[in-house]
Image 1: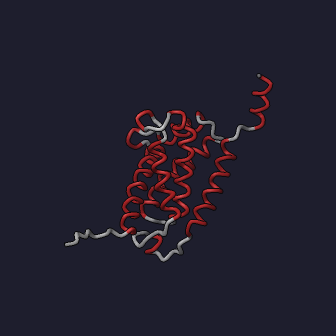
Image 2: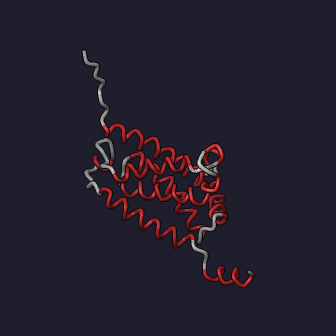
Image 3: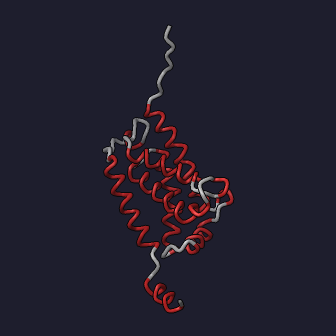
Length: 178
C-alpha cells in the first residue's frame, strides 16, 4: 500500500506567502504613513530619513513609507508583481544597510533576520510567474518576468545610491574641518 498526500499547487503556495508578506510590509508602511500601531507617522519617519543620512530626507521619507504601504498592498493583491517586488526588495535592502546591519543577524537585537526574510520572499515573487491567484493574471496583464524585476531593482538601486551620497558642499566642509 502506497501512502500519497495531495500536492498543493505552487500557485496557492506563492499566493499565500505573497499575501502574508505583502500585508506585513503594508502594516509597516501604515506605521510610517499614518502612525498606526505605534509607528512614527510621516513626520517622524522623515526625521528618521534625516538621521539615516538620506538626501533629501522629505522626499525619501514619502517614497519609502509609501513604497511599503502601497507596495505591500499591491504585492498582497498580486498587482504588477515584478515591479512592486523589486521596490519592496530594495526597500528591505536599504533597511538592512541603514538600520539593521550593525545589529547583527538576529531580530531579537534588531538585526537583519526579519527584513532579509521579507526581501527574499519579495525577490522570489518578483522572478516567478504571478500565478493564477493574482490580479496580474485576473486582469490579463502580461507576465513581465524576471527581466522587469531586475530592471526596476537596478533603477531603484541607482536612485538609492544617488540619494544616499553626501552632497559635495558637505564633503568639502567635512574635509576642511578635519
